Amino acid sequence: MEMRRLQENDCQLLASAIWLLIPESDRGGNIASHAYLKQALADKNCYFILCVVDSTPIGYLSAFRFPAVESTSFQVYLYDIVVDEKFRRKGIGTRMIEELKRCCIEDQISRIWVGTSLDNEAAKRTFEITGARKVGETYVEYIYYLDEGA
Image (tube, rainbow, N blue to C red; front, side, top):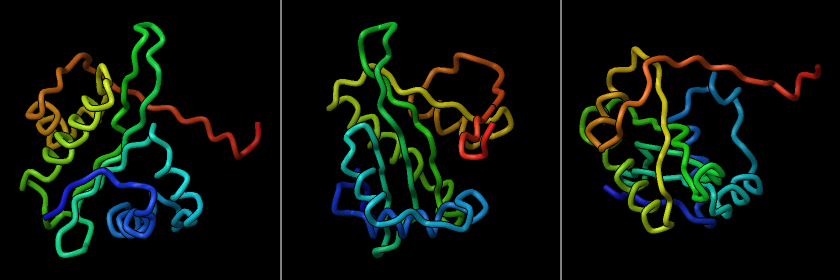
C-alpha cells in the first residue's frame, strides 16, 4: 500500500483515481484533460493525496490552501475524501488525513477546516479519531453555478 501527495507528473494516476473513485454523477461523466490535471497538480495550494494498492487507487483526498486573513496565516480546506467501498473501515481515510496533516505541518499551515453532513457518522468518526475538534452543529450548503448565467 502506497500513500502520498501527488506531484505534477502524476496526471494519469489522478485521472485514474477520479475515474474509479468519484461517482459519475458527481463528475458529470467527465474527466478533466491532462493539461488541466497537470495545472492543478503543479499548484502548491492544491493537495491531492492518494492511497494505491497494486497500482490501483483505492483512496483519494483533495484539499486546498488559502490565506486566513483574520489571522495572517494559511489554512487548508479538506474538500473531499473518498475510499473504495471494499477498503472502508480499514483506516485508509485516517491515514490519508494524517498524510495531509503531515504535509500541512511541513507547509506551516495553522489549521485544516472540514465539514460533513450531520448524518455522516463515518466521516465524523474519522475526523474525531484524527484529532479534529467539532465546532458546530449544523451544515447548510449553497452553490453558485456561475456557468449557467444569471
